[in-house]
Image (cartoon, rainbow, N blue to C red; front, side):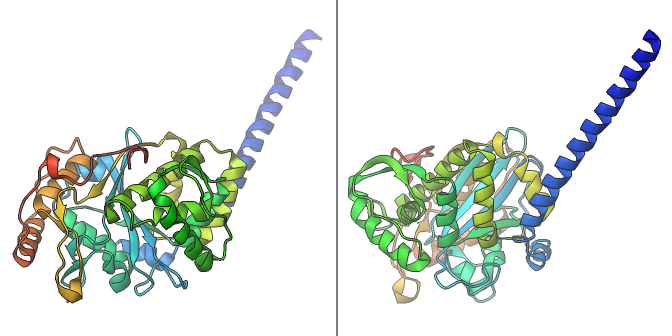
Length: 374
């Protein structure tokens, strides 16, 4: 009798184990289907195919290619809709290079100033503000401009507009930002404009200090330009908002993350495949934001006539690119600037008269981790 009972118990144990495994498989399968169905709303097959033809720099090393994943993030000044995967939609008000260390999961962010004077990767475009690359040739042109001028191997991009950023922050329940007294007037002016553009109502911000801003307020904060050191400080604010969003997302529950996905996925443009997105997503809670910085660190801001206007000229491009690589890829000792970067650097110097003035003392900003010192 005892032997029979043991056999039955063993059989019941095996059945229970099989049932548990089947249940787990069903849950995993449902989760995969659920996420996969959401990604159908964001992945653009045509844009995905175009990513295979994006030109990258010949100077890319094995360390850059194997140890790091580099992605371009674009925040568009899009006010009337349009396909963000196409040219003619909008200028890129925010341009951020994200370098992800595949081993340590450390993420570094480098803002490229919208008025940075570079050679646009489009026939006949010549040298002008890098913000124009998006409206001239779409995200592909913008990515290739970064690769061409900065010796990078970016093939993936993510683009959002005012509405997407606002809704994403609201889905997270707002973000914590340290607002300065001198920023309040410009911030509230931007909030009024944000409400007109997105139709999402919001109160103003009436006091300085560390506080929780809603989506409209935080987006307006990231757009402050006429306070402090112009676009240099604005990019610090943009990175502060991104950093605050990542921190808040990592502290959020699954319900909040689900709401976030529902809100922003239809409003995001990217050329990344589902497999690439899922590969990054599985490590979401392992990523750690490290230092962030603006490019070019050493620069000057001349006005180059009515056509090109006031620009941010790297002083010079070659030295700034060397420093950028040291920041994004600190373990890459094999990198040597390409002939293309050396050519463009010399051409910009010849056109503007701006030569190599790069020193740590003259740099616009040091790497930062929060917005507390903006």
